[in-house]
Image (cartoon, protein in one colour):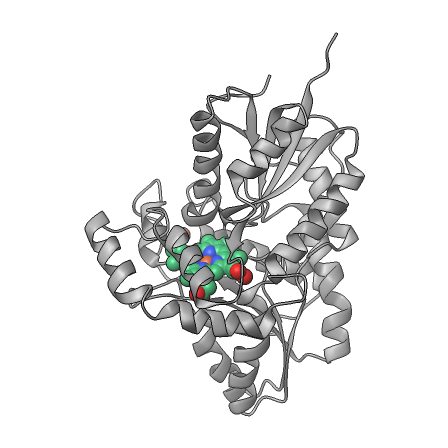
Length: 364
Ligand SMILES: C=CC1=C(C)c2cc3[nH]c(cc4nc(cc5[nH]c(cc1n2)c(C)c5CCC(=O)O)C(CCC(=O)O)=C4C)c(C)c3C=C
Ligand SMILES: [Fe+2]
Ligand SMILES: [Fe+2]
């Protein structure tokens, strides 16, 4: 009897190959050509990309990348490799593991080829985004099916849902944050999530009437908004606040990294920072729980730029809480997420709530 070899793909968003304008332009071109990211008419997208974004942004972004680049490469890639290697060690004999990026390298096709070369004939995909968004999670799922179909590969594939409320994920973030917040003697914690255009939120609302329709529409997760990115972010904040024992009024949620002039989800991190300073917050700790690995958006946007802004407004310190990276508690949580989604382990601390979403080739 032959046993099926299973492959686990850990997929993050992507990063340039080098912190220089050329590689950053290539990466941004691939990323921003995705209609799930820039969801406008193809002609408008071409013009925006080629006439507005790509002539100017790559040089500016390259400068930002240079400030956080490491000897081993882009932080997102370095942490992703460390996670994949730790997970591979823990799941040896059960799964072959590869890291892939939705855009850039290591590419999804290359990772799939590498797994196939090791005899894998069944795939499980964990998009490394805690909250569900079309531009991240759905785009990753759509691409994996495309990659398999392009190769006429009919192997079964399972993709895991977002894990914003997974106990293992939340415990890991709390375990990383507790000593950092204590050491910083923080008097306030800001939970800063990657933003999204408001248009994306409305388009993903199955009811067409709930999302952003009222001031408090994301304050609770209901059957209607259970897949709403902003509502999942607020739910992650609530769960972390509880685990960290933060007092009412001792924390704020905001959204960073907006691009362009259209409205993005609010409140904006760069507007919240001066408000907090004005209210008398002196020692701010910032957590970024939309990212499971430190990257440009945590290290440069928050760790450098937001810190400078907050200090310029009268704050005394801004401490970035590191992301999960390859923290052992997070490695455990990833293994539990995978095993329980795949039915290969009894539900432990970490479990699949919503269900693994079977794709067009459901695993048997
Ligand atoms: C957390 C998940 C992410 C979502 C959702 C997301 C949506 C989204 N992003 C942009 C534009 C940019 N994002 C950039 C970097 C970036 N974004 C994420 C994650 C999400 N993005 C990560 C992990 C990173 C860091 C990559 C790294 O190399 O470290 C960038 C590139 C950097 C820059 O030039 O500022 C852009 C641009 C849009 C438009 C969007 C949804 C519509
Ligand atoms: Fe982004
Ligand atoms: Fe919503």
